[in-house]
Length: 484
Image 1 (cartoon, rainbow, N blue to C red):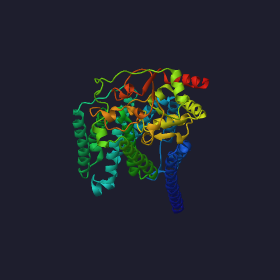
Image 2: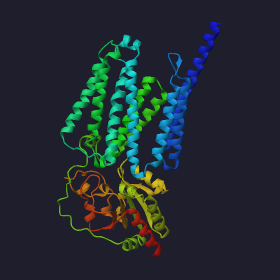
Image 3: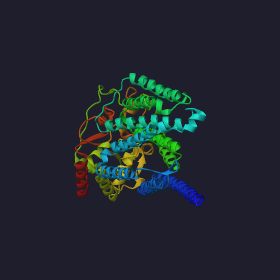
Image 4: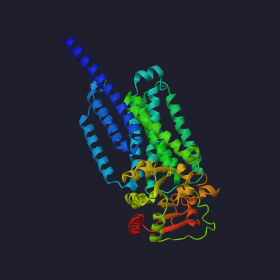
């Protein structure tokens, strides 16, 4: 009888393990499908849903079928309560967040992922397999996964929180050169901790937890100091890089638990973030090392130059100029998001096209405060995807553009990036609005952009300033064009 019970338990355990493994495979496939669908606005919403379903399957299967030392997972009530609480908080935040604060939300959520990975490492280090320690000492894959997850997750958490503060205007850049050397020293120390801990040999992990806590503290400090000098047009690149860090930290947790879903999800996030970071650096004509070590946002070079006088225009004149053009490009920036004027921008482009004007949107890779910020903003107002053209492609034909309308963009249209070697923007590709036949800049005032330097475009011969809130000015333009 006892043997029969054991056989049944073994069969049930084996069946449960099989279902769990299959669930992880299904979840991994859904992650991949979801990521693939995120590549186009028309399918992005469904892609998020597919990936969320995959995560839900992985969570439910883990709760039902995962065994620890042959026993089911305990504290189910706490786990479910945490899931419900976290879901409710995330849902409420996502519903209430404004589009202008979307970059901050991305940084915050990204930081939470890195923090969770670091907590996993802290909790699991005392429970390193005794068998592995006896056979290999501390020099084994489990220890390496834990320490890498701790280091990368902590850096991602702290760095993302600093990025959140910067994007929200609460933290200012610190560009002192000494931080470079401090950061290099801290990184060397962190690697040294990993090497030292793994070389300790056969030892009880609980006896060296103090080293892990010290390493945690150093990693958090490094994460803060790593992001502090970086600002200006480099912030979207840093957000993307930190996102890849979070993915790598999650993958370390997957290796630790032998969890295929965590491994796949972490690798997808890490690799996608890394590829995006490299592509953005390439689009900005900068190396990743240059972004991390020598950030934009330095001294306001060019502010002391004699740039000439600005020329203002009226809403009526701007409406006439736009309505009787053949080609118009709209160059959106963070100011468009602040004014929540994307819907009116789309209404303007539809009105102009009804009058025979060809309208495109010039999208700079780092316009806004996060990768793809302008794409998301315009997709929200149902701007057709084929109207969004990368700046490099727009620049090839920009001399034939009758009017370039700059709405809230600043650094990404600043000619100083091309003609002022002393400018901190120098070398960054821009949307060459100064090459269009006419340029209208919609702006509240003469304030500087995120890189805090003077914009030479404001003083160009072909530029006219249309001062005022973007939302109200766009509405006035629409009304004027309708009356023509």
